[in-house]
Length: 114
Image (cartoon, rainbow, N blue to C red; front, side, top):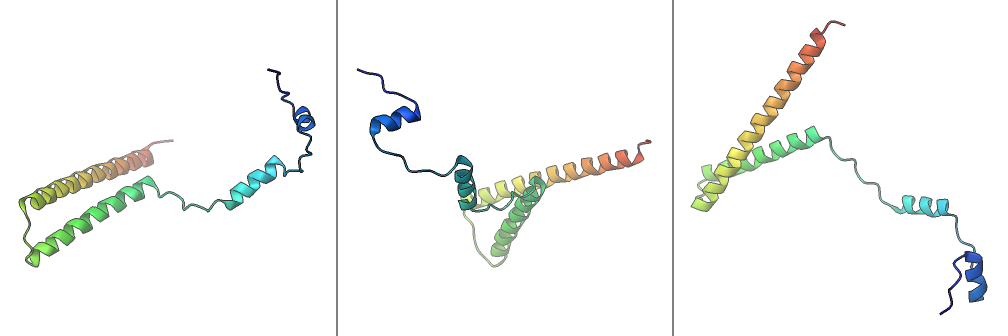
Protein backbone atom coordinates (compact mmCIF):
# COMPACT_ATOMS: atom_id res chain seq x y z
CA UNK A 1 0.00 0.00 0.00
CA UNK A 2 1.42 3.37 -1.00
CA UNK A 3 1.75 6.15 1.55
CA UNK A 4 -0.54 9.12 0.94
CA UNK A 5 0.99 12.60 0.98
CA UNK A 6 0.14 14.71 4.01
CA UNK A 7 0.91 18.26 2.90
CA UNK A 8 -2.04 20.40 1.71
CA UNK A 9 -0.45 21.05 -1.69
CA UNK A 10 0.07 17.35 -2.30
CA UNK A 11 -3.47 16.53 -1.15
CA UNK A 12 -4.97 19.09 -3.55
CA UNK A 13 -2.82 17.79 -6.38
CA UNK A 14 -3.88 14.19 -5.82
CA UNK A 15 -7.60 14.93 -5.54
CA UNK A 16 -7.65 17.04 -8.70
CA UNK A 17 -10.17 19.48 -7.21
CA UNK A 18 -9.37 23.04 -6.28
CA UNK A 19 -10.40 23.96 -2.77
CA UNK A 20 -12.57 27.03 -2.34
CA UNK A 21 -11.00 29.85 -0.30
CA UNK A 22 -11.97 29.57 3.33
CA UNK A 23 -12.23 32.17 6.07
CA UNK A 24 -9.22 32.71 8.27
CA UNK A 25 -8.98 30.96 11.60
CA UNK A 26 -9.47 34.25 13.46
CA UNK A 27 -12.63 35.00 11.49
CA UNK A 28 -13.98 31.55 12.32
CA UNK A 29 -13.30 32.13 16.03
CA UNK A 30 -15.00 35.53 15.99
CA UNK A 31 -18.03 34.00 14.28
CA UNK A 32 -18.24 31.29 16.95
CA UNK A 33 -17.93 33.79 19.80
CA UNK A 34 -20.64 36.07 18.43
CA UNK A 35 -22.97 33.10 17.91
CA UNK A 36 -22.79 32.04 21.56
CA UNK A 37 -25.45 33.51 23.88
CA UNK A 38 -24.21 35.64 26.75
CA UNK A 39 -24.58 33.83 30.05
CA UNK A 40 -25.52 35.68 33.19
CA UNK A 41 -22.60 36.08 35.57
CA UNK A 42 -22.51 33.61 38.43
CA UNK A 43 -23.69 35.04 41.74
CA UNK A 44 -21.16 35.69 44.46
CA UNK A 45 -20.81 32.59 46.69
CA UNK A 46 -21.90 34.52 49.79
CA UNK A 47 -25.00 35.80 48.00
CA UNK A 48 -25.83 32.27 46.80
CA UNK A 49 -25.46 30.91 50.35
CA UNK A 50 -27.73 33.61 51.76
CA UNK A 51 -30.28 32.92 49.03
CA UNK A 52 -30.27 29.23 49.98
CA UNK A 53 -30.84 30.12 53.65
CA UNK A 54 -33.73 32.39 52.68
CA UNK A 55 -35.31 29.67 50.51
CA UNK A 56 -35.08 27.20 53.39
CA UNK A 57 -36.73 29.71 55.74
CA UNK A 58 -39.55 30.31 53.27
CA UNK A 59 -40.07 26.57 52.83
CA UNK A 60 -40.30 26.04 56.61
CA UNK A 61 -42.63 29.03 56.97
CA UNK A 62 -44.92 27.57 54.30
CA UNK A 63 -45.07 24.21 56.08
CA UNK A 64 -45.80 25.87 59.43
CA UNK A 65 -48.53 27.98 57.84
CA UNK A 66 -50.10 24.82 56.40
CA UNK A 67 -50.02 23.25 59.88
CA UNK A 68 -51.74 26.32 61.34
CA UNK A 69 -54.47 26.00 58.71
CA UNK A 70 -55.17 22.49 59.98
CA UNK A 71 -53.21 20.27 57.64
CA UNK A 72 -52.15 17.00 59.18
CA UNK A 73 -48.81 15.43 58.37
CA UNK A 74 -47.76 11.82 58.23
CA UNK A 75 -44.88 10.51 60.32
CA UNK A 76 -42.70 10.49 57.22
CA UNK A 77 -43.51 14.15 56.47
CA UNK A 78 -42.86 15.16 60.08
CA UNK A 79 -39.50 13.41 60.06
CA UNK A 80 -38.58 15.21 56.83
CA UNK A 81 -39.71 18.50 58.37
CA UNK A 82 -37.53 17.85 61.41
CA UNK A 83 -34.53 17.12 59.18
CA UNK A 84 -35.15 20.31 57.17
CA UNK A 85 -35.45 22.39 60.35
CA UNK A 86 -32.23 20.90 61.72
CA UNK A 87 -30.39 21.54 58.45
CA UNK A 88 -31.70 25.12 58.41
CA UNK A 89 -30.58 25.75 62.00
CA UNK A 90 -27.12 24.33 61.25
CA UNK A 91 -26.80 26.53 58.16
CA UNK A 92 -27.81 29.64 60.11
CA UNK A 93 -25.34 28.76 62.87
CA UNK A 94 -22.47 28.34 60.39
CA UNK A 95 -23.40 31.58 58.62
CA UNK A 96 -23.45 33.48 61.92
CA UNK A 97 -20.01 32.10 62.83
CA UNK A 98 -18.62 33.17 59.46
CA UNK A 99 -20.03 36.68 59.90
CA UNK A 100 -18.67 36.87 63.45
CA UNK A 101 -15.19 35.79 62.32
CA UNK A 102 -15.31 38.32 59.48
CA UNK A 103 -16.28 41.10 61.86
CA UNK A 104 -13.47 40.14 64.24
CA UNK A 105 -10.99 40.16 61.35
CA UNK A 106 -12.10 43.63 60.29
CA UNK A 107 -11.84 44.92 63.87
CA UNK A 108 -8.35 43.46 64.17
CA UNK A 109 -7.27 44.96 60.85
CA UNK A 110 -8.61 48.39 61.81
CA UNK A 111 -6.86 48.33 65.19
CA UNK A 112 -3.52 47.25 63.70
CA UNK A 113 -0.81 49.92 63.91
CA UNK A 114 0.84 50.67 60.58
